[in-house]
Image 1 (cartoon, one colour):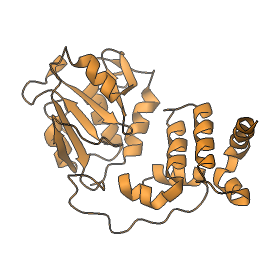
Image 2 (cartoon, one colour):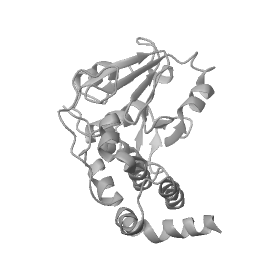
Image 3 (tube, rainbow, N blue to C red):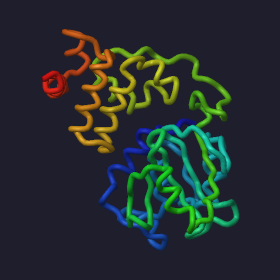
Image 4 (cartoon, rainbow, N blue to C red):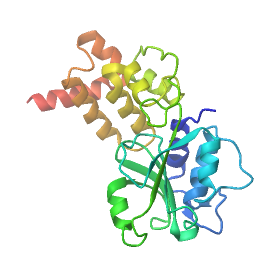
Length: 252
């Protein structure tokens, strides 16, 4: 079974600012709690149904049944996009004793939070620090899909990853459709275009603004990752004029 991380993150983003937090009315469509939001996001992304929207206790077994493996327990780890993080020691995490969230990159998480009364994106380390006092640590479990490359829990590497070709916009669409896998497999397929493609994905998911996207693409261009002349134009597509304008301003 494969869970499409991009679909799960998009599920959260589509409801950001549109839903509230509630442990009583947690099945949507206007309110969720942390674990029910994670459940419905992963269900939309291909996870199997449970008899009810899991909580921070039942989520552990449900994740394992859906192809996730525990890769870290209350220790440091290298967070990557798609990691599922559950706070609260098993047997003690019901209600305000636990929390569930989804990693969107190596530093940030997206989640449905009581403190924000809805879905929000936070720096994980900062959010952990804010909750260190109220949750006594908190105690942390991290799950990752077994098929995710470069994972301590990986049991089988994908056979082959198709080579990436085409404009950044085309590649971003293909990544969001699950074509190039995740982690190191995706990086290998996209090569020098990896950061630029991820930038466009983050813009589409509204994790960053268009202005931020254009500036990051300009950084990638200056780093020599997007070619020159006709190759640059082909890579940037509809982004070309905006990015080239930034390059011209920086050169003044």
